[in-house]
Amino acid sequence: TDFEKAQQLSMSLRGTAQKLLGDLKYSVVNDYDALKDILGQRFNPRERVTAYRCEFRARKRKSGEAIPDFGYALRRLVRLAYPDDEYSNILEQLVINQFILGLAHVEMEKHVQFAHPTTLETAIAQAVEFEAFTNAQEMPQKPKAEEFHTKSLP
Image (cartoon, rainbow, N blue to C red):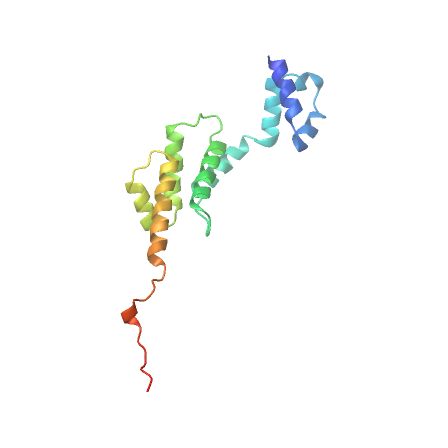
């Protein structure tokens, strides 16, 4: 029932959210929908949705940031930016597109884009593969034996 849900929610709150309960009327604490609305207004106000959308659109991969961390940060942001929408193929495509644009490495962007990923996991895998390949190519190679020039001792 809604009363039981309100009780369970109230008992599971910690920290600041739990302190907020002390300021509420008994009738609100026992009304699941009212309690959920008050907590939503306090911890995820509607005004923040616009800020999350701007942050999502501007998000680029940070220097030294792991590719999977970047991808999953975008997924988290899109859920905050579109809280009323069910996570669907459309939101997944938004995340994939922003992921590709945010890689900030033109060749990697092309590699991932040309793979036509349909999931974020696939896009991440393509980017990780590209990065591993390019890092292996850039590693210094051991010189071949004939490249050593030694002086002959008298």
